[in-house]
Image 1 (cartoon, rainbow, N blue to C red):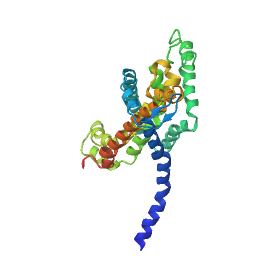
Image 2: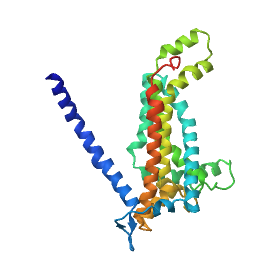
Image 3: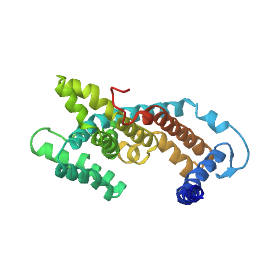
Length: 288
């Protein structure tokens, strides 16, 4: 009798998140998939039917180049973000409680500001007449302003700034719950700090690293705001193609086909994470 009550209570608690996922994730995903194999209307919109024309259109050399460029930009951005985030997360994990709280507050603080405002604030910093250029010219470091806006450098600055918290937080979470006695045992057995880091700290942080990679790489692929504001017309990504397909070309089936492809990429990353990373999370390196 008690077991049945527990099962009913479990179903009651499970219903709200399950309902939310079905209504706001599964149903929109199904609509996107249906649109992606439908016909385009003469004046836009969607005509019911079945065709793979829009998926075949993805292999057009133009879109292949844009997709490859997006993958390259997302990969470089992920590497840059990881390079900057790991030392921050490492320092936070072993800092005092007060310092840890302050750093956590500073990392979360940008989320209190609108995303568009944050991006345009970068424009005021790195623009031709921005604060950085004015400072460098005033101090004599450069003779004329550096042209950073509408370049890949500006795009990377925006992406790294945007993705930094999403990389720092999961790595910090992995390092913060690491068993400190493993580090003490390694040092007591004569291992150097570098060897201890390679054999214990780094393996223990890998679940957070891979989670950060997923949280960084995948959203970067579909982002269209940062390339639009900071990159200009010469640095478009696949997210810009999707936006134009829905808003300007009014080709909803083609935009849905690109979106479905990105969703498939997301699912591959998530499945790989759950299959190979999550099961070993928290297991000591010596055991693995």
